[in-house]
Amino acid sequence: MERFLLFSVMLSSRKKFFFIYWTVYLVFISIYMYQSKKEEYKNSEKASAVVIDRIERTGRRSYFYPQFQFTYNDSVYISADKLLWTRGKEIGKKLIVIFPKGYPEAAVIYTFVSYWIVLPTLLLSIMIFFFFFAIIVIVKWKEGSTMFR
Image (cartoon, rainbow, N blue to C red):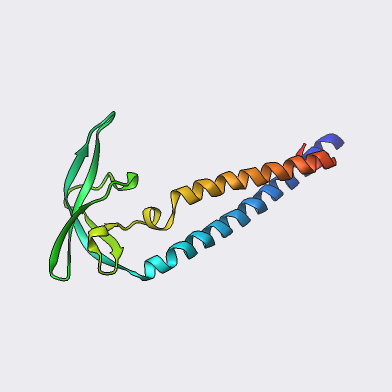
């Protein structure tokens, strides 16, 4: 029974450590991503758009990308967005597009994921997160800490 209680305390401290480590990581990566896109967001404009067609791209698999139309300064612009999470947009669906001020040719569909989460940064940060976690576990294990056994 005593061994079981010791194991539950070890498991508990391991979970606490991982929870705190994960929380700190999420807070810092969220702040970093927000700060990296904040200035770009301030210097951009949004417009209402509507999906007018779905462009098919063939290769090993077929993909349909939404082609959308919007009006900016009395001109009509047509563009397409080839991001993975915008593929499911149906013809006639209303969207919000975002583009740098005065440059509507660079319009993309505005969604939280596609605009605020930078995938390469996120993947790199996850790799760094687990690298440092592994270093901490190895160092603590070599020191004889029972927390990571």
